[in-house]
Image 1: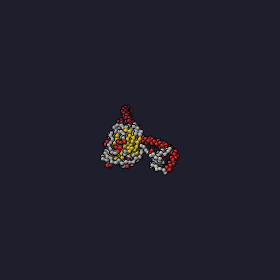
Image 2: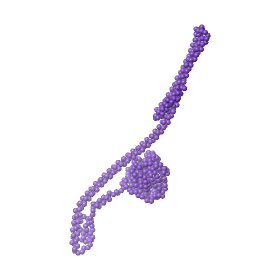
Image 3: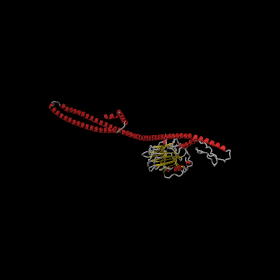
Image 4: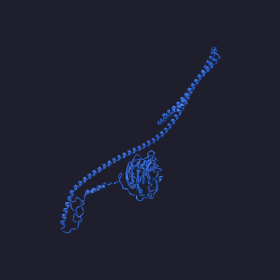
Length: 524
C-alpha cells in the first residue's frame, strides 16, 4: 500500500484532521480565512503541476540513461568480443560461450535496479498526488463547514443588530420623555414659586388692609362714644318734655351719619332719631375677605366629584376590551388624510382597572408618538399622558374614571397659543396653554385604539393596554365649544364635521367585541 494512502487512513491522521476542522469551525470566519483557503488550494494545484513536470523530466532522464547504458553495454560487448577473439583465442569454446551470457545477466541486473528506482520514484509521486487530493477534499469540507458557520453567525448578528437598534430607539424615547418630564417639573416648580410670591404679596396686602382698618376703628371709637353721650342727653331731654302736653308718636330711624350737629325729628315732631344699631365692622370685613378668596374661575387643574350620566342613548357602537392582551386592538382607517392644527377627541369610557391604559395612539414612520392618550401601571392611578409629537406631553387628571361607571371625556387642542382643555362629564377639569404651539400633526400614520405603538401598527406593551369599554368615540379637526361638549355628554345630536368615529373601526383583533347598545346603561 502506498505511503500517502496509509497516512490518510490512520486514526491519528483522521483525529488530527477532525480536531483541525473543529478548531477552524469554532473560529469566526472572515474574508481573510476564505482568501487563505483559496490561496492554499491554488498553491496545491501549482505544486502538483510542478511535481508532474519534475517527475516527467526524471523519467525522461532515466530512460535516456537506460539507452546510454544499453548503448555502452552493446559497445562493450562488441569490444569484448573483439578482445576475446583477439586475446582469448586460446580459451576453450565453452568459456567463450559463457562469458556473453554472464555479461548479459549483469546488464539485466543493472537495468532492473535502475527500473526499480524509477518505479519507486513514480510511486512516491503518485502517493503525494493522492495525498494532496485527499487534503484538497478535506479543505473543501472544512470550507463548507466554515461557510455554514459564517451564515449562522451572520444571522445571529442580524438578530443582535435588530435588538440593539430597538433598544437604542426605546432608550432615546425614554431619554426624551425624561427630558420633557424634567422640563415640566421645572416649569411647575417655577409656576408654584410665582404662585407663592403672589400669595405672599396678597397676604402682605391683607395685613396692611387689616392694620388700616384697625386704625380707622380706633379713630371712630371716640366719635361713637361722643355720639352715644349726645344721644343719652337727648333722651333725658325728651323724658323731661314728655311730662307736658301729649306729643304724637314718633318712629325713630337708625342714624347713618356719624357727624350730626343737631337732632332731626321725623314727621315734623320734636323727637330725635334713635341711636344707631351696633355693627361689627371687623366681622363684616372678614366675611368679605373670605368671599374674595373663593375662586373666580378655573385654575389649571382642580378636584371634581364624579357625576352619573343618567339615561344616555343613541351613542352608536361600542368596543369592549376584556383584558390586557397585546392582541386586543382596534384600527381606525383611513386615519388622518390631512395635517391637523386643531382636534377634539370625545368618547364615553368605562373601566374598573387600577390604571386607565391607552385610549388612542397615532404613529408615523418619523415618530411613533405623534398623538397619544395613554396611561400605564408605572404612572399615578388615573393619570394620563396627552402626547403630541413626542417628547412633548401634558399629564391629565382622570382618577375618578376608575370607578367602573360610564364617564364622558373630551380632550381638545389647538396649535393657536398651544391651548388645550379637558372636559369630563360636562365639567372643565384641566386647561393650559403653550403646548405644541404652531405644531401640525402630519397625515398618513396608523391610528390605533386600546394599545400604544412602538412602531407603525405594532410594538404593543400589555402594561399600556386599555381594559374596559369605550362608546361614541369621535374625532374632529376643530375645537368644540362648551355647548357642543355638553350636548355630547347628554346624548344629544353629534356635532357636525366629525372626521372619524367608531364606525371607522373596521379592523379589530384579539378578544375585542363590537356591540350596538341602544343606551349606555344596557351595554355589557
